[in-house]
Length: 277
Image 1: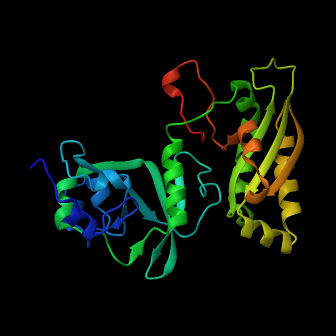
Image 2 (image 1 turned 90 degrees about the vertical axis):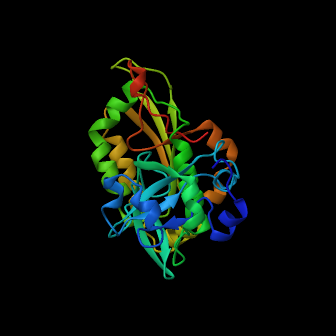
């Protein structure tokens, strides 16, 4: 079969972000590798983009790509809003309740797209638009990136654990991204210091809530102290900002930073492309 009825796929509800389970799509799940099909609590999210998922040619688009979502107890701020390139925490709506799930970048695979004709996404589980946009950004980050100097990364290493602990606190749940301004952006001798400015970018509602609760200043101070404890780095400031107050001009001047941000290695096979364009 080289053709597929796109109208059936559309009426079945297949699109990027559609969710399915072992119970809603037993044929799909039975064709998966054992490590994906062994747990009936897994939710699978279609990550093939919309125009490809309903393409009428099975020659041009033979596969559905999906990713596994594993239920977790609570969100960890280290892994929300694409802060980490390998792991993402998002919420799925299940029976009108928001339930936290974890996605790992290695938990992606392909299925025969022809199977979608006889299978439908689950109806009571869905990925809301804001979480879908986060998922798309996270997947795209895998292929686009900007590396940081090895020397900078080595100097951050001693405080990385403390920073990760701070980013797991509730004050980080509404944090969209961390941007840094690094001067210089080159490798430095051990007797030279980097100058670092940090911007913590929040969702508007989360930012206002933290301001109202009067706990943002203390949290920002803790972030600043953690960076200050990194050897060979001078902190010129840590600034919390609402997304509304962070213009494109500043985004283009700064580097989006993640706690396990990869620098260029001598072996280029080790380089991860994890930065937003």
